[in-house]
Length: 501
Image (cartoon, rainbow, N blue to C red; front, side, top):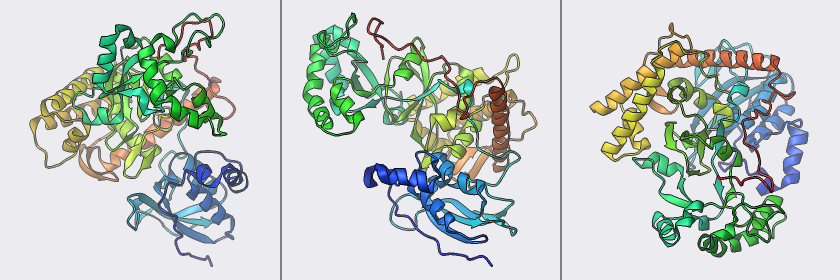
């Protein structure tokens, strides 16, 4: 007979800080001896599950409480994916519910068994046909999605600005420009997630000093370099030298090579996202999304801005791309395959965008771009008239008691957009059944649960088909990752023009 168990609990802190709290040697031990050399940015609960499973005899079981990221991203790949590939099954699970204590976070309840399981599987207290490592019922197609070559080099995380001394209030930036108009060369609007979600016009509330990848001065510039240097802008450099350099010098005392690099290049604001800005050079606008979001709204913003690290930036500027990404097809895809942060989605460009299979074709005279543009314009008008940002607008959108005509029109446009996108996929047979439905994220105006499952199954099948075609064409390396796309801009040498972002 199998042995059942008491659930084992993990402390409700952030388990990803393994190296910082316990050291690199401990992390390396976990990877090599517990995870079978499988690497990834996994939570501690994944290693806990692997270690517990290694002590099970055939027919043995255990259960535990884990962060709900146990079924997401790298944590799933290191933990549950390996367990189910090596003879374990998940007979029962609760994918996400509030932590049974005072901490504000979501946890998963997971049961693990070594060997076969013949009795009904139970998911969220309901009998199901089986349970996958995603803590979901198996669909027609199983397995994780693959990153697609066709999506590579188009999605990015914004810039990490390390040091508040780089960030300026608009009035301070304007004074610098009034003092010397040339200072505008290194002063840029700085858009963050709060601006995007809370301001009705999504305008940046602050500016940032940006010396790009320039040398500090002529003396330290590489031989043959004739481009601009930070010292050409003494007003702005003086601010950074006073407010940022002392903190960077403290970083330089650490043994960490990254910290030492920040100290050495103290006039650079941090991780500049060079691939991002090279890719979007020449584009008039880009699609932007807050990485941590509950509603997942995409917005077109004008180029020429420094994007904060909590933003995802998509290097696409057509209305078809907006409509597809704003549709419920992509919405439910990312909630299924990206990780979460408490009750919010933690959007991952690699897991959410790079794996997402766009429609294979568009019929002539398709209404998708027209509807997408109308949706974006109407939503913007709603926010400007109401003086409300995206968050409040979508709170109204998903509130079944909200009957205002402008919000109802936005819902109608969303239905048209979803229908058009489904047609673009060739899914004219699919009944989306829009309405107010209960989801894991609460009540949402969205497609029905049956439609959601069918959409996810069809998208996964399409992802696998596209990936197989790309592998056959030699577009992926031996590890299955997309090869370099060639879309990234040329890196500047000492004699090249400097990078402009």
